[in-house]
Image (cartoon, rainbow, N blue to C red):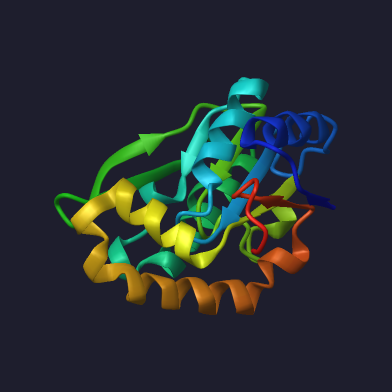
Length: 193
């Protein structure tokens, strides 16, 4: 289902209504993955959906092992969070400390009925059996880059091409957009995605 709406808030309302009826697949937890490329609008949509559902948001940024860590982030998501939820255990993982350039504090997630995971890798094929829903957010490349660099400034500039390459390989290999339950236009009003 493709969702082209006038605002991210309108998309969030529709996604939240749809997701509220989805089955649990990670134990007693319904997990919504919000995936897409950097700067596409994932975080904004995920926070809006989570706010409507009263669910916590887990950013994939907490799971990546730095600028080359998209694959390791997916591994942490599946092994550290989703499988423990499915087994009725409390998920525990190390949060990546971007300033220190290494994994830092141990985080424990109390059992929850709903969880929104946002970021590149949230909808990985390896996670699919434990997800209750997958939303893919798309926006034009030029807009995504402007947003990402405005958000992260000089920190992201030297890493943009390297990270974009990881995104391209992951999204192609895992066919995230093709497997998504809902496709959302992360740039309402834009003519082309």
